[in-house]
Image (cartoon, rainbow, N blue to C red; front, top):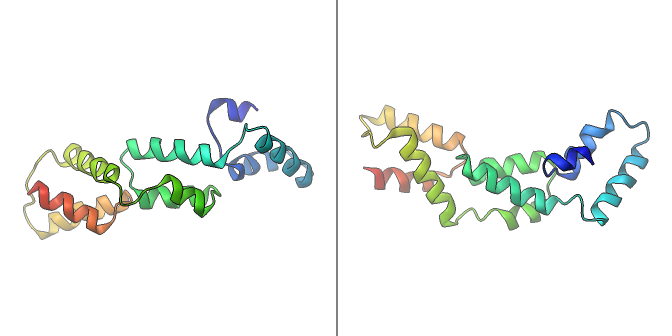
Length: 137
């Protein structure tokens, strides 16, 4: 309960944190099932909060999808929470690009490739990056 009081967690995160202290995995699974049935533990709620937080921090849908997958969230929940083609991601990318490069023009292809790699590492698709870089020029 102390873990859930601080922030939302996925079921797998809680399991990983508590499994080191628990001698019987069946008992731990039973306790987690009870938390889920009581509505105190929800992968859906965790994913929604995670997408909102990471999106506001400048991460794109591909990066967030991978992070949620690593935290044990089901694909259906991830796809419900992430609208990869949504305008929200394009706006987040535009804001990130403006903050990072402050309307500085692209000098050469090496600079353009460097910017593209950075934005891809943040989890944005090539088509999203291309749109932002075309409008910035």
